Image (cartoon, rainbow, N blue to C red):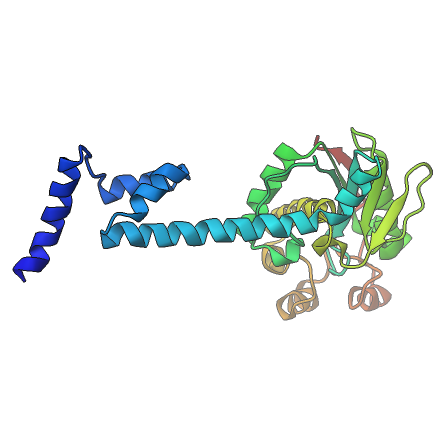
Length: 291
């Protein structure tokens, strides 16, 4: 027992003899949060205190995860890097949110990212937590070279059909960017735009950084709009199901009817339209240049 008690004392005495003042563990913890230099790390690795070694293990794990994420982002930028290597400096990605819901707008975005980005967690918006999506929205807005967002209402969706509405919105977003792209990447949507080659990538939001960024911008914008619609129509639960055909949403439609934000060309709204006058759907056709 005496020998166990003696170890910390001897460690301190040894440090004093060598002219060193051993850092407190709390101080080392704060220093590790700032990613210190190799000389400091080497010194701490020789520190026999268990608390210090536990901190170093956690630090090494964090650095390994960070490196793994950086490699994933590097792969995610593969389609962009290929185009950059062919002399195309500005590559836009485009994606949409809201094709399937019974209610709410179709929101589409186009984004041009710089060649170097710091966006850990960037991915298909469906693979990112709501909290991280909100954070990425702000980070993308800060780092992107250009961003456009299109909002189409249910009236436009009903008139064009959802596929043509998505094509129209993507084209509008790509052709109104503040920085003119030399090429574009879309998420599984063939587009024909004069003077702008567009490559359609299946599962593009998980294969291209620019498409993933557009996916995040579109998803967060739409979710925020549905939260606002929830305040206007609290009985429908829009903040929860975001306009999709959940059981709660279907029950609300049967009980309260439809709102101007419901798509008349979608079932079961379409069937209800055949049995009575639902009133006009909301018309919305906006293009927003965020940057």
